[in-house]
Image (cartoon, rainbow, N blue to C red; front, side, top):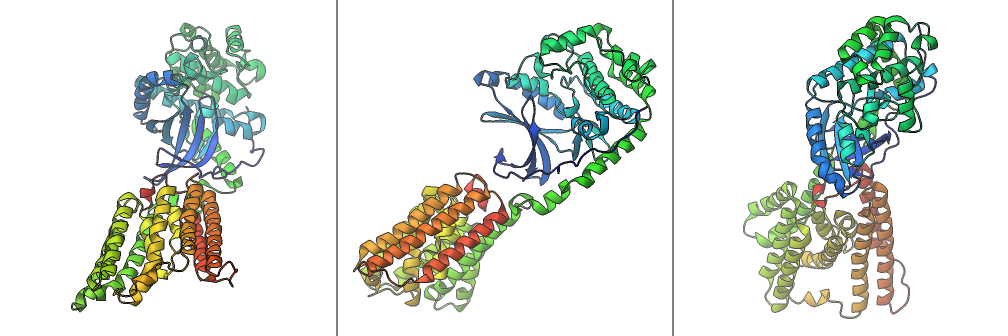
Length: 584
């Protein structure tokens, strides 16, 4: 009888190098890839809605003709999702999105049988371990067969052992799904594990799964499948020829074990063992103790876990960005930021609007901040309205009144087209008022929305930063000083500074929104910041008659600091959501 052997090499961490550059179905963040098989790619993902790991099988759809058979695949996926059994991986969902079909499944923290066999000396399991394997997989298959579901792709990569020694069978319904999505014939099985009727596209039933399970057991005991071949035709020839007697390869595999294996591997389905329960009883009786096998498998998986660099729990708890592990944190931060800047801007407006009501002077900023915390665009709308009203109420000549009307129209157009769609836009527009700098909103505008909306937001924020300091210092009474806001001497310099803000925001957004990864967000901020600083110095040179002035680092410093802060926030948050509304 074979003995258990230690793992031969260090297992790669289950949480492989992270790739957060993609999000599936607007919900699942990719953590790592578990490899690509005959049917598609298996991905370990983080469910941002339910805060749990899941395994997702992603299959490319092969042409428009495949879509007509997806109904059949969906029906089988629904049936598979109802297979509640401790040895079956639970199916949560099945979705089709664009060129891919997705099967969302329970995540099992462990190794596939193929991975385990590759890590033990000789590539085999002990008899006890194999008895546990047979009993567990047969139990899962028996339950599925009772419910009218065939597996049709039993192989080592579809059998998973977790760190408690529990064996689970996955990918029920994948054969039908593979056919529906355009993968090869024979209802999607795997060469080396399929019986003749499946290879030839004939009628399949429970005995098809029995054959495949027997091949897996043979491989677990003897190290390889007896029917692996370069082509399906060659595999079919090997099956019809028949395998060698197991007792010739291992003298201990005679008697009942040999009879059961050969009976399950008969080329003619009518000559096979008729039920998976019968196969299980005969093999378990002949091989050993399933409970001892489960403990042995648990020990092997523990070795693999100890040699990994990080356990899956450590990965999720310590290394996932906040936007994935705690998606409410970035959203709460955006709301708090909007509430803070709204309250700061509303504070000097209160005396201008409620001079005779001291209580309202205190309550109004608090109410505006609370509104911004509940829904940031509402807070921005309130303070923008208050700003325009304060200027209009203080006006005794036509110029301030006209300015208030222009400001109101600008805010309304911006809010309707951009401001109400992105929560970060509130901070982008109001930050220039808080910091008394026209460029203060550009860094945030560039990361808040797509390029057009970011450009418009930067334009509005520049006007706010240009007008607010003058208006606030005058108590919003702009009679006689409106002209000072106009670029009388060198309008080209002012337009250059304004254009720099708009272009910087557009470039930042274009790079940021090109990909969802954090690296693109950081790169966008760096390029946008450089463009803005250059434009500010060019504008200053124009104002000085073509002479380069001594640098004024106020605006440049504000832009650099804010860009760095935005980059830090992006790194902590992780990849951005596809939908800008999700920012809040």
